[in-house]
Image (tube, rainbow, N blue to C red; front, top):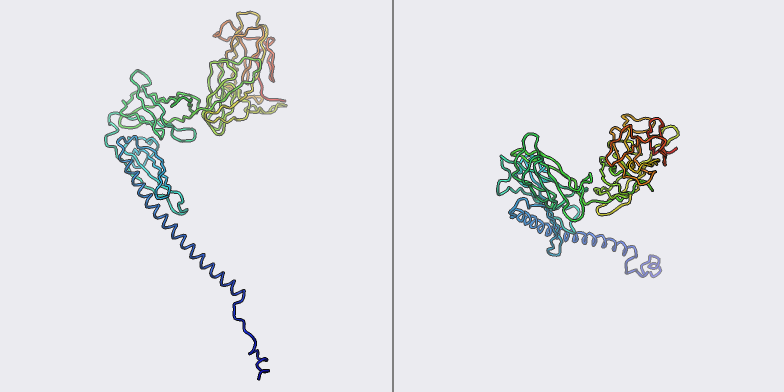
Length: 453
């Protein structure tokens, strides 16, 4: 019997525990269940916290609407951004306000035309730790003025002042006066959105208009995109409607510009052209100072500075000269960045000539007159408008002068204001080129060429 039990294995000892594989499987099952429970609990806590924060944000939005409605002056209802901490959460409250002239038009400063009817206020509240899929709390309303703003027999001038980046510029002084005639000017200052409102303005008639001007809001200089520190625009005013004017105005950058004329004079009235990704601008000058500080609107793409007025004469721009024969194309100087309040150094290439035999002490003023050419030739650009550039009086019998690229005739006279004529033209024998170019002996036309062989 015992032998039979041994054969059947009935007397062998049995394992009373679990195998390692069973332990691992059990732990994995426990981990999956625990992870699911923890994720569910965390999601519930997050949803609960977000719901509580959303309720607070809704109350803050309603409170901001009430604050906007409680402001007595509707023109003082503007952009507000503030931070509020409640119950350990930080909320960001953003209020925006725009004028509506009708139900379909909403534009900054009410520039959509028509009359100022009401102001649309939008409040957006967000908070830190906000769930990614959860939207902000947004509330908007319309505020009607308590008093009539627009007089049906008078007009309104709306002024918008924005920076180079499109942000409203606050506290800018604004004036408006009749373009012709006299009268007390209307004045205002831009609000936090860069808007100013001139109300109950007498309408214009005929060709008369209002000249609207702005000026620097502080000690630091501001300029518009053309470099003007006190720009102006004109606008008519029609009774019962609003007229709008818009300025781009920002704290100026400075280009410390050196015209490459070592040992040479530059013209007192020579313009400097600014070329950028916007329209070119020609800045007039009344000084022969070199270097010259040029105030410019800050522009991320920068400016290329060129001597002369390239709008009037394309030949001044070396980048417009094309290859011809052995001559290679001209190269425009690289653009230089100009940031608000930050000076940048610029060097501008120019041509240079000597004028000899200025032996008469009373005939030592030199004038350069551009040669007009309506069409391009030999790779040289056209020069549609004649320019007359005047140099300071020289003190020696030989003067060295720098000029913008292009073709010129030189004249000498006995005063700072003499008129250039064929009779006082400097002959080719008294002209020496110091840079690449050519002289026509018969006409004494000097061409200053930016190209190289």
